[in-house]
Image (tube, rainbow, N blue to C red; front, side):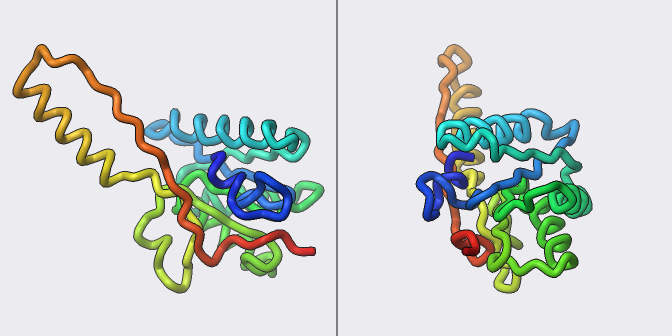
Length: 177
């Protein structure tokens, strides 16, 4: 989440999370660890920027409907966020739906970013800012390491670290004045 909290803002360190950020986290039995890490990364990045008082996390299901409900919950709280980072692109779709329904302009009134950089995130009408987790590289490395291990079972295990990258699109902008 440091990627999103540092992306191109007026105040250093703010990006997908411009001004007063919110975070919509997925809660799902099959993806339990990743959302916790994302929320932890978000909290750590916000604290490191001196924005601990601005931390706002909503836990929801890993669905478009979950994103919709999570965004509604954020909007019902005092002090509307100026940006929301959704823990998955599919969740961000629901966030976008809720904001449109509330009459908010994205990114004019509020910025939205997702995670996964799925194919539909790049689709022109959506053009969702998203974190790309290098899925192709992860798969390639996993296959290569598996084949190497099959060929030589005594081979020591290897840890490969890949860095995610932010793909800025049309759903993020500096906070409104």
